[in-house]
Length: 333
Image (cartoon, rainbow, N blue to C red; front, side):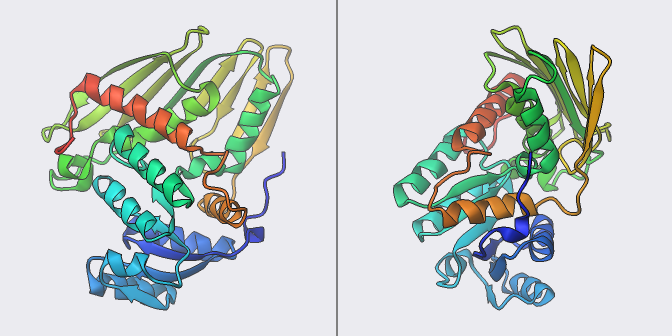
């Protein structure tokens, strides 16, 4: 299949809400690989906003989020704050009539995600979770291959995402106030991968261990489907795992190289002895989701078929159930 060049997407004027590490990558790859314009940045710290604007040559730096979302030179707001703030930030931007791309996970839980999507539909603006892997060439190609029946009926899926990230208790990953834990930050990738291939599960089982701060440090999730298919997914803050994935079908398998959720390659091996591979290694990676937003907004659409609101809600509900089984509850839930 052919993936459109991100540079061909019509330019939008982007505002950055939250100038942290992930926002730096977002702007670098947007400027390097697309025709998009980054016109403003907003932070609760005027100094941080100014430094970010200076680094990237952004014209407007706002010392509060309200000024950013009301900026008339901003069409769409990219939200890159901690997970716990996503809902409030997205609703603020939507109320100002802005389209939104919200970093994954879109919110802390499915109920909050529904609020965001409902508000966007009511306002007639585009809203999407920034699950960048959904738009990458290798993910789109392997999904197409499965759809063509290249490995027959899918029987099983497996994926892991573990990083050695056992920081101090005040770090956002270990802080329940900021919706920390492995699942929302890392586990969302293998869960989304399984959902891309198998859809919404019929049964969910989770086991794991909590940190001293009562967020999930490790989780293994088994998804069961009434069709007989299954998925085994693993995530941890306590070890750097291979970060690979595979899909097994009745007539073959797909092996996805590390890092499976970033631009990479995969190989299809069939039981008849034939095989072929796909090289999806490209610079960057964020540019594909950015271009998708631009194309859908230009077409006056409010969601993308590559990452629908229902896709996001399904994944959030899986994580809600996994957290419930593990005993992870965030303050205010």
